[in-house]
Image (cartoon, rainbow, N blue to C red; front, side):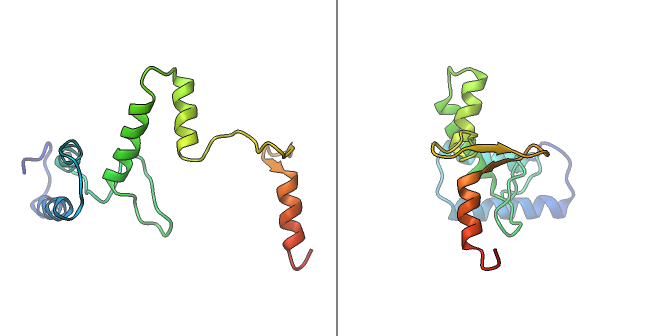
Length: 129
């Protein structure tokens, strides 16, 4: 594999081995394989991503997983305004800011928003309340 920048021999060898093993064991389309190959040629591991995404336990999300999510969002947001794209992406990841329909939001002094009904439910379950 020809890399797009200088890398020490040991790093090139490691990245090539990871890439070969990854494409051998991970089902993907030709388009996905090209994206992964370009990522590795730029000097990155298939096991890291450009978004800084991590799983629980401190394990980085694989590049292809992030790429697939981003490609899905790009595909479904063509023709949308930037605000619509942002709302779609936030909703896709479950981060939309729409309040629950039956809850009343309350802001505290630091700017956090609390759901009163949820807090009451949690407090009721606490053994030391």
